[in-house]
Length: 259
Image (cartoon, rainbow, N blue to C red; front, side, top):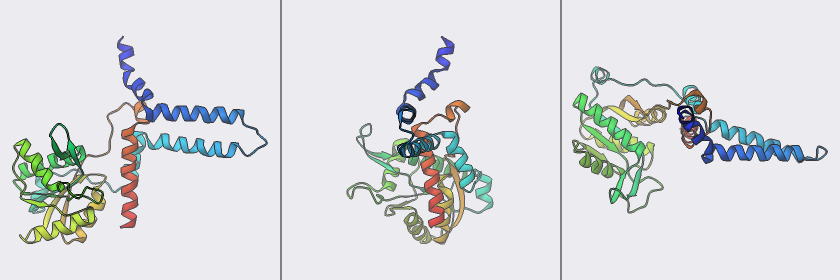
């Protein structure tokens, strides 16, 4: 029984669509290849489909996501309270990460899991350093016009947690570039120029570039590193989380070259 239970994560991964769908597609391609007419060109598209399937498999593996993160993006270490004091940081700035506008459990909007994890880390840094905190985020380019700005939703989340209120709410930004521009203008009114910037580690290099271009002196405070606690075997099996993380890395890698 214990042996079967130990196989539960592996069996679960094999049953879920990311793995089972790719395995089925690969099996069908092999079957078609073997039945195809060697004198025709039918095998070329099958071979290309097979390579595409293999590529999708690899891009859906957390092991590949971790490798891509380490090799395609600049690596930034975690920050400490002493680092922030030594660099004379004046405020903690949390970069928005998305909103769930109709969360049934709250009967209203709440932060997405990614945004909430950023906010929680911002709270941690603010508490251990006694620095005031800002949150930057509007409705986003794809957000509904009547939706609450993300910074206001973050303020609601803090109230639910009984945590201290935000010192600043930047509510107009629709992307990272505007996050930087509007936050610099908001903080500049009070002479704030040195900030600790909180966002996911994979998002940090591009964010630092944008905030420094806006005139702020930035101390990166990365969190949410791409890593995995899964066994080596499970890390090489496709999963929705693996595909999501490789997408993050590739998007940021492209963004660093286009900005």
